[in-house]
Length: 321
Image 1 (cartoon, rainbow, N blue to C red):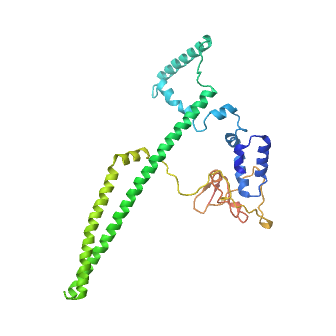
Image 2 (tube, rainbow, N blue to C red):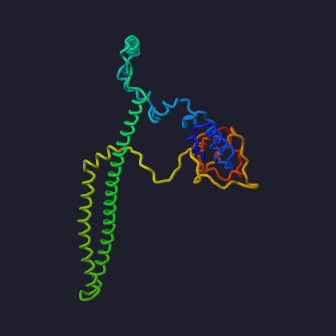
C-alpha cells in the first residue's frame, strides 16, 4: 500500500493513501510517512499527478539525464575554457550576438523554422532510440561481465589446485623423511622394511607427478593472465560495481520483511505522536554518533522495542552513544 503512491492519479486516491499512512498502527510506518511529508518535493517528484510538470514533459523528458549538465561540453567547445576574464567576456558577447542574429532571422523569414526536429514525435523517437541503445550496451556489458567472471573463477580454481598440490607435497615430503628415519631400524628382509620402502617409492613418484601438475597449472594461469581478451575485459569493466549477494531493501521502502506486522495491543501499544513531530532514533550500539536526518533515511530494522527506551538522552539532531 505504501508504494501505491507512485501510481495515484486522483485526489481521492491520494487522500486514501494519506489516511492509510496517518492511521497506521505501526510505528515504523508512521515515522516513514513523517519523513516523506517533511519534504514537499519528495512525493511530487515521483508522482505525475502531484508534479507541476505537464503530461507531455513528464512522459518525454527522461528522469535519468541532466540536460543542463550534458550541454556543458558543447558550450565549452564554443566559448573555450581556462581563458582570461576579458577574453571570456568577449567570446560570450560574440556568441550572444550570433544567437540573437539567428533568432532575428527566424522571426523575419517565415520559411525558416528553428529546431523543427524537437516536437513530441521526434522526442519520443529519440527516447525510444536512447532506451534501445542503453539496452544494447547493458546486454553487451552483462555478457562481458559474465565472461570475465568465468575467467576469474577459472583462475581461482587453478590457484586452489596449486595450493592443494603444494599442501600434498609438504605432507609427502614429511612422510618420506619419517620413512627414511625408520628404515634403518629394520632388516632388508623384514616385511615392514619392504612395505616402507615401497611406500617411499610411491611417495617419490607422486612428488614428481605433483611437480609436473603444478607446472601445467601455472602455465594455464599465465596464459589466462597474459591473454588479450582477459586484459581487455579487465580494462573495460574496471571499477564496475558488482551485484551484491546480500538481500537488501531500498532505503525508503517498507514491507513485511523489515516491519513487524503484529500490531501492539493492550498496555504495550505504542502511542502514535501527531504528524509533524519527529520520534527520536534509538541509540546505535556500534560506538558512533548518528545523524538523525541520515538515520531517518535508512531502513527500519532498528525500530524495535521503543516502549522501554529512555528518550531523554537525545539532544539536537545527534545521538550520543
